[in-house]
Length: 481
Image (cartoon, rainbow, N blue to C red; front, side, top):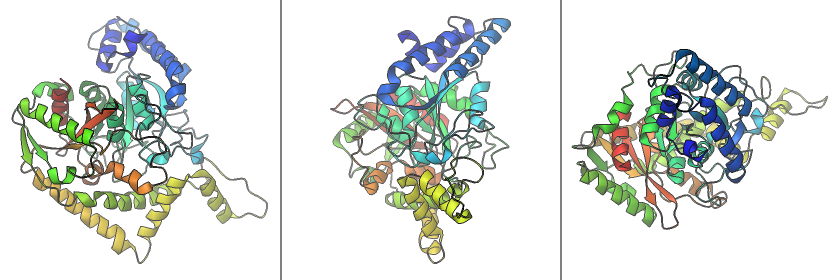
């Protein structure tokens, strides 16, 4: 079993395609790993044991009928986990919220359909901060997920379940969603590669919306190669998503060996110089030196409005959440409160939402409703959108001098569970280096960059030009070597 669960996704697909292993053998090995590890980590909301094995058997049957070919589907037989905010037909999809308890979507998200078209086996749905609102996976109504490196610590959030599932080798790769760092921060905390693609690169059809101008789906994997393999499978235009881009998708795997010779790496030293753990600073400096030794050139840049990114994000994201979560009212699906004979529609709405939403979701919905209300819209929401434009201009100016922008992914390694739950501001500041990529729509990647003295993973982040994920993969691959 050990040899299978330690294989990379590309190697698994190749072995299944050639008949060196069966999809059933691979699937069973990962299901056995889940049985052994899940109690320690609590990564999953749902594990689809019977469905996954049936899918594996069907793939084996099709392969045997067609003969073994080394150029089979790119993810043939690869076990994949999905963050539990992606609709999966007939499978509970809860967003880790009481308000969606018992909800079974009648359709699958586009990314799920594309993974399965590429041969993947969806093995389960992973835990998250409720409706993806959080940075530690402690806001889940189903309980916290724990970091496989140290179970007293957070795996990050909101895609903490997906990151923990991959880091503990319960799946080969996973999908998360990233609204302000929710793929990259868990990737950094769990020693993984995590990619937030360009806004519009990956369809959001079937993703339960948090903040529609910020949300994007992306992969979590052990290597840049596996992350590129997954993004290749899910990227591309989707007519079911009006924000999906028709920009052609390049060959990400071919870009891996491009190297970084001549690559200009922008470093906003003033922005990343304060409030960062010493171990993170060292890992960041060492990563920059490794890129420089490989032929890249370091360029000092400025991002003068980056310090405003957190307040801008928490105005725009909460405003959009207030609008998006209005649909959860107990009328059509999900939780509905018990009603007495005298109760009316207003009481049903109020009690349903009070019972169904957790404290953090309520906090953000109330804040978002406030900033959109008459008398406050111009002072808060409109002003935040104006500063968002300034952030975009900062990056446009930076990219005149560099090709990618480098930062730490997080200010610290993984923090203790419970350490920041009583201080929302400190929790929000965990995303200080990640939210700008969502506000600007730019692609960004977190790459493992070593360990802290406590043996906790540290990540570094690269942000690229619109639709230039290929350069991010190339630079990540160099760092891995």
